[in-house]
Length: 101
Image 1 (cartoon, rainbow, N blue to C red):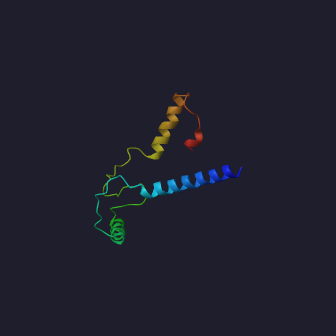
Image 2 (image 1 turned 60 degrees about the horizontal axis):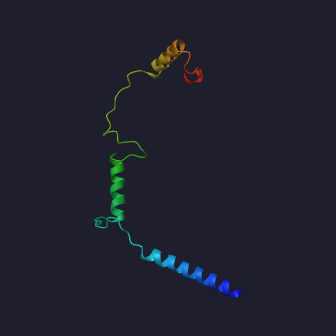
Image 3 (image 1 turned 135 degrees about the vertical axis):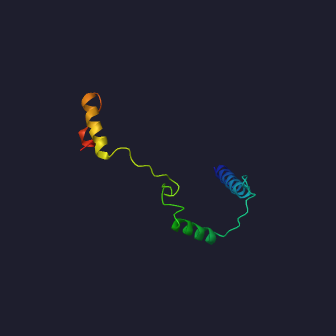
């Protein structure tokens, strides 16, 4: 029984050592030709300036200067009125009136 325990302990040690050495020798195989020309602090400062100038906005919004503002063709009240009229002529459509109230 001692021989089995010793053999299992030895096998576990060899396996753990092999896994550890495999991780150490793994090299990044992607593109490595990029060379940074700015420090992290410089990039952060440039980002702050771009946000202040409106070139970068928070979240998923684009800066207003890059997006063309198109006026709405109809008001919300007009759209609601159309929906009510449509539902009157199409009873198969959802009759959830809480949407328009």
